[in-house]
Amino acid sequence: MDEENLSQDNYKNNFNFKNLLSIRNITILLITLTLLNLIYIDIVTLRNPKTTIIEKVINITKPSTPSESSSTKVTDQVCPQTCMAQIYEATASSRMQPTTIPTITPTITSTISSAPEVSIVKEFFIPFGSGSSTAGDWQDIAGIQATIDTANFPGLKSVTFEATVRIPTGNEIAYIRLYNVTDKHPVWFSELSLEGGTPKLLISKPITLDGGTKLYQVQMKTSLKYQAIFDQARLHIITY
Image (cartoon, rainbow, N blue to C red; front, side):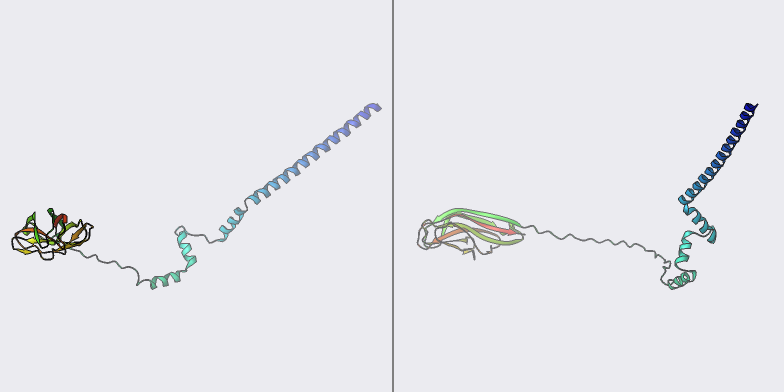
């Protein structure tokens, strides 16, 4: 009997202990869940602090009607209605007024403009040939002549007589000119001269050719009657 009573007492004690453990566990579990829930709410609140602020602003701010636009709100904040009215009155005179576009009737005028004439410069060379002389006075160089008609050179600008002369001895003066055989007179300003032994191209001042067809002859003379040679003689004519 004593053993049975002892075992029953042990059983009751174990049962009461287990019940205490279960109640304790449940209590701890509930407290833990409550703490976790509070922690979760705090975390959510800290992560979204703007949500509460935005809601407060919306509750305080005067509700706006649908017809109000954002541009109107900005204008009201920058300048009140009375300010806008004053600006409108001050700028009334400077605002562009509708203008009437005049009707333009095109006038057609016909003009004939003549293009300016272009002057073309042309150069001509009339060769006489080459020759030599030892004469002490003016003498014709045989065969050194040319017939020239000034009508073949319209727009005559300038004419010069050119000759390349050399003196082999180099100790005299040689002279050369152009002679108008037809009218029997020298061509004025055509006379050229060379002193020394170095060959040189001599160019006269501008000369005047007589009008019409004329025969021109090359003449030479020397100061000491030594030989003087011209390798070429020619007329240089420029027209425009």
